[in-house]
Length: 191
Image: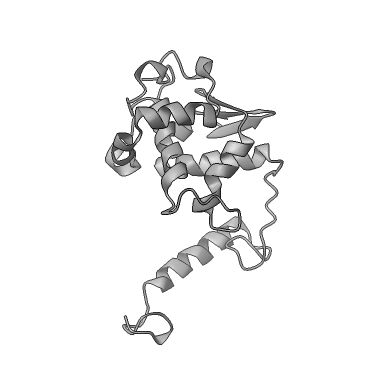
């Protein structure tokens, strides 16, 4: 266990048992310089010494790096005109200058400071594999100069001046309504 206090969640639920066998030594050797891991911040219980141990932060974030890298069927297509499965890994790679693991004080999942991204205990142990990948993309956006501006476009979950509570209700109503489609399927097509 890392020097931070954390409880390892169920690894079937988090996806770590699914991704861990996919993270080969060849992938680790590629990911380490590509995502600019800084060794001094992944030793002493963070996983450098036991890189395949998904109880430790390094293996958990490598699972998420694998997801970012290979989730698109045509993963070599990194075109920014495609969907996020195509461009997210490229964007993270281009933005990250240093990737650190740290305990944190519990107030944040991750933080971007100048040229480095620090991932904290909450990222490793409160998020599942896709959630950790999302954190990499989110923090890469900060490295790319994007703040938390809360200016959501009209039509989005938080758009048109909605407050978070209103948006949450609207999203819940949309999910509930999504399950009430006619037997004919969406837009009257055959189911």
